[in-house]
Image (cartoon, rainbow, N blue to C red; front, side):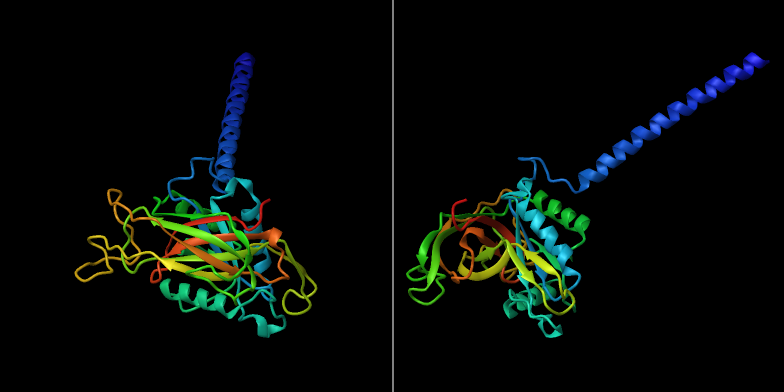
Length: 319
């Protein structure tokens, strides 16, 4: 009887050890899946969507914004995302009356955010708000939600190709279509090329070119972030419209008489794209900006739905 009890105890211990081992394996697998949710995709396995434009609407006067700013900086600096995720930081101006005037803010960026609120059918604007490819939005500090939207955008099929030539530094004069700045003003010229790979509905998409600056440090003296030292990257300094591609309407989508559907909806995989178009763009550069920390970003955006179809980026100066 004693032997039987001993055998039963041994069997129970063995069973318990097997159960514990199984639980450990399950926990490790679950942890791996959890970690993988925020991991960058392997090179060449990001899907066919091409670069994803991530726009953060932020303010130095908002105490909730620094975590979102830090997330955007990580996306910029993480080499796994290089050329795949293109972050842009728009500093809005509607926080400026609450004690601290953000030196990078502009009413243009507030208006741009309002445009997104309209297409998202929202009656409010807020910071930090992050918009991915002009299609979806989320709170900019919610990393899990941000990464999920980025992966969804990467999984979408490519609709357009955008490329940038090597910038030519000099003056902002003589740049042709899309030129900005006074004649002879300091700046750079760059050639941007865009092509639709498939027809899209609605009005012809616009090609925009932005100039961003990173490595900015500000000692905040008032407002919600008083006494804090803030670090900002990918701050949009300049945004100019280069040109528009011709409208191409897909059968069964909106944008022309006798069609129906959603503006900005791409065509099917069997549709043929358009011819590439190029233009020289002049980008004015303030002498106080650090050219070594500046990037040029070009993106193709539907003027009605605000969907971004394609993008490209490159440094202003060689690195």
